[in-house]
Image (cartoon, rainbow, N blue to C red):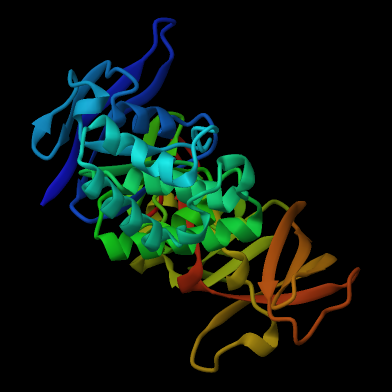
Length: 374
């Protein structure tokens, strides 16, 4: 069942600035959908339009089959959790949880039951008598989540709820939100600029840039089949390496490809010119992308796969613990490789890196730099 449907939703301000352009997608019942993109891309504006806190310039928003463009926020049966906790400082945890139910004039018995159940779900039982000033950041965020959960709304909207927490707390709260989603079988729309948050939480992800939807898909499809250079570079840490060059026939074999980067050529011998849709881009500029984990040292190679090899100068080694980032230079640009920590190369020297052709990504160099499918 479709819980939320957006059809060509647009937000244009009085000064002519268009924050959201023709946003169209559907959220299924019980789905956790993540809106992700850099700051200022329009994702929070779109969430606020769904919530009824921003007007819609054009297009329609449906919740449970009814168009809600002109319906007040309080009548949309949604609950929103903001970046700021927005707790009442003079109220205890129990009073903060109960407040919205009191406004709806529920009986004391029903309120007490709902507060107790929500507190148990979120592990707040021992904090019920404390006020917000006596809570940690993670505890305050759980109370803010509890205030949304207790109402049992049709849709939960979460606007960067973890951005004020430190890295360790963010990780634990991500797990908490994922667990709550499974437990409650709730429909959630979650906004974040953190691509790791998006990848770990979202069943599907909507990637935004400059007010426009770039791609909607599952986390792994976005990672392995990005539709353009922006999506490819935004998802993944470290970011995908990009090589801007001209696709040419290999100097030693006219039936094979290479990428002309100026003074050097990147070999693409496994791609046959006559059999590939890439032939449409022969002698034209393209962008080649390869993720850091797909640039391998020799001891990582699999015997049943074919690899191309290239020599790069190693500038620096960045140990992370369970892995190492190699910072290299090739064709006058920075390149990053992610490798296991068992063999650490020596900096300042050239090392051989290997890549499999099925791990490479090809993009057009003009317009939106869309993916080349072949």
